[in-house]
Length: 295
Image 1 (spheres, one colour):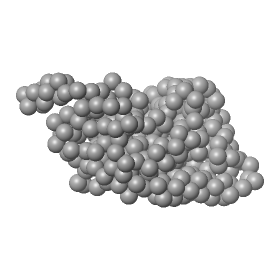
Image 2 (cartoon, rainbow, N blue to C red; image 1 turned 90 degrees about the horizontal axis):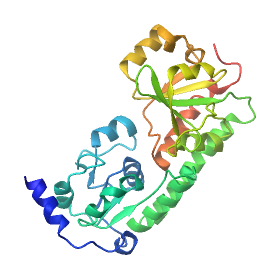
Image 3 (cartoon, rainbow, N blue to C red; image 1 turned 30 degrees about the vertical axis):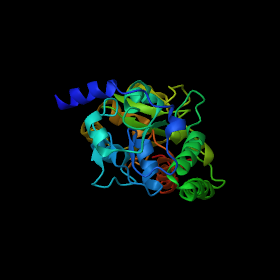
Image 4 (spheres, one colour; image 1 turned 60 degrees about the horizontal axis):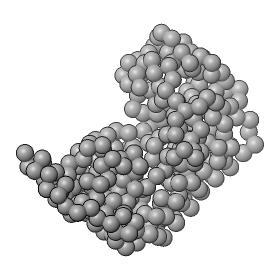
């Protein structure tokens, strides 16, 4: 009842100025809807007051670790207006994915929407731009420049480690269940890191502007001589079939023992912290990319 009343009262408030005009310089109190923005805040040394779906962040993003004192503000698409208003943020961070709710959020505090995944399929470039924008808004310009330099450095280290070695294409995916996966392709943060490190994406088919394709496990039959990276969390049924080499999933050449690795959670729809973490994880698995390695 209270939440519905607050929603009604907020709807009566005047619409604030456009976000870029209203966002205060060097904002200190920040809430965010998006996990990728949250990880960037943490990497800049800013702990958000509140974040949507904090359990999901811990399960899918993982690092940087989310402090226990970050308030849960509900679902990303339908955050609690009551909780958000109680936090009294100077600014609420969002992405174009949540454009529909931004007019309502804007009655609580100015909204800054940052797009990383767009139709131009260049998420890494946008992640750098968004990092600088956040650095400016939060008074963390040097931290933002340092994050960009550190992430570029991690990718350069990976590229140097690979050197002139003959490598196999790399397939990167999340499992949805034991029959379906999200396979990362052109337009994904992972694909951008692979390219910058001198590696080739094994998935040559198209996808959406988020940079992934919904693929049935049977479609992976066509993937040959590729290194496979499966990212946590992995559904229990998938893990069991891979271990037992059971069914179609267990028998596919790309899932042969020694031909794939399961990586810790790293957010495929994040910003520079996810890009740097992915590069670090790739560096630990360069042996998997060497041509001729497959079992």
